Length: 346
Length: 132
Image (cartoon, rainbow over the protein chains, first blue to last red):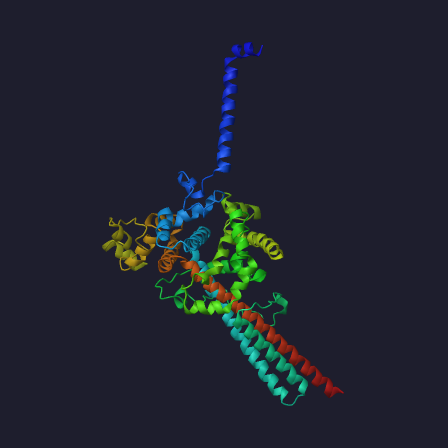
């Protein structure tokens, strides 16, 4: 009966056959994509991804935006040119810095990494000014205490001695690069931060601090302030802005990096003042000096690959795209805070 | 800016000179790569490539292009000096410095508080002593 039916309905059987063919094709494509997927670089360039593809380890297929950023700024030729003059050991580090640089340029097409540099220089200036003020206040107190102590009892002398000892301990701890407990509670801070006028142009330009670079970017203060508000919030969280302001990476590849260079490890590395002083003496001599660069990858997220993340953020907050960085910053901070608590617990 | 504008009418900009092409009045590089600074363009071209720079410039608003070019020039120079870390190396150094200063500040603030409370106790006891 069925044979008769098919004979009688040749169009129907053809339709069924075509459906079957289509389903097989979809299945084949899914399986191919799932098990033998090309890296993001090869996918983008529509070429076969060989087993020894040099770009595959850095551009997983799940993060196409990562490669797009790098491709847009450096181009594949540019990356290959940079990599070909480096040792094998230096290549992964170089790729990480390239990916980070491209990511920053994507987020801030005007200022790129220079925006971050200027912002950090401003932070340094701010901290130095505040430190100066606190130290002068401390000096005043010490003098006052010394004057009082001339006619006071032994108990107070002992107290000051204790404080002095404590300070020496702190200094020695800092010299040794040991971590110190930080009180993040702003209410306990005795000396409030300096009131720096928001319209004031900070005196630290790139030229002032870096190696005779002839370019003096005229980045407006409002722009750097925008970044400042995003990252200064982050400082309070765990004292590490670019981890905090970044995203949580849910990718396996990046989780690997995270587990190798956990947040706590990075923090302890960063406290190491000895390393800082070494770095200032001979910057760029030692590969290990830039250990913390690993954390930069943490901020590069797969979420970026979900198209138009910026727009999504903006629409979710119900505001215009006037200040997309600020809006993203809030979202990022929220997610990063959760991430931080999870990583620190684990 | 004005000088570079006036210059490119006379001689080709650094980019067009480098690329050996005719510098027209529509040249996107001309206002930002004056012929007096040939290395600025050479560096940027070596690291990012002229077409990528041109794309970036077209995506950026005209009033922000100078900043964009300067930041690209800075990044290119940093990458040429340090091919491994580029400007990211400078960022990490600055980050460490900021962290160190913030910790130092926290400690100094804590010291100040200790002194303040110490002096506070002192004055209270002195005042109490006088009263009794």
